[in-house]
Image (cartoon, rainbow, N blue to C red; front, side):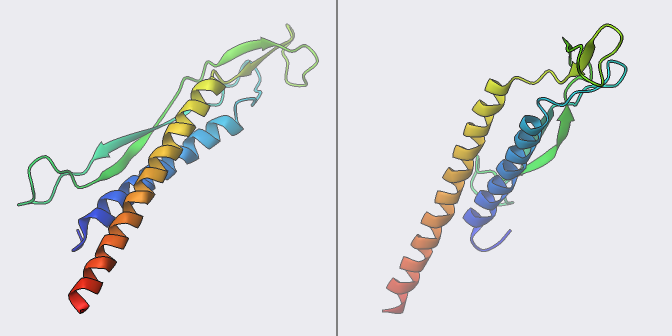
Length: 139
C-alpha cells in the first residue's frame, strides 16, 4: 500500500471494472456464436470480485480496494434454434447458441462503465487535492 491509499483503492476498482467490461464485451461478441447440437454452447463469462482487507491500524470499516477473484462460466447447454439452412445444423435443422440476454449484457456494461468513470473521477479529484496541498505547503 502506498502513501496515498486513495490511488491504490480507486486503481484496484478501475482494474476490476475494466476486467468486467472485457468479460461483457466477450459475451456480446459471442452472443450469436453457432455450434453443432453435439458441441457445447459458448459459455457466458461472469467476473467475481472480492474485497481487499483494509490496512492494519487503518480506520475501521475502510477496505483496501477490490480484486478479481476469478471468472465463472455460464451453462454449456445454451438454446437450440431451428436454422435448417445453417451449415452446422443437424438432421433436424437445429443448431446450438449461447443463452445470453443482450439486454442484461448492455445493462451490466452501462453499470460497469459508470463505475469505471466514477473511480476515474476519484483519482482525478485526489490528484487535484494533493497538488493543491503541495502548492499551499510551498508558499
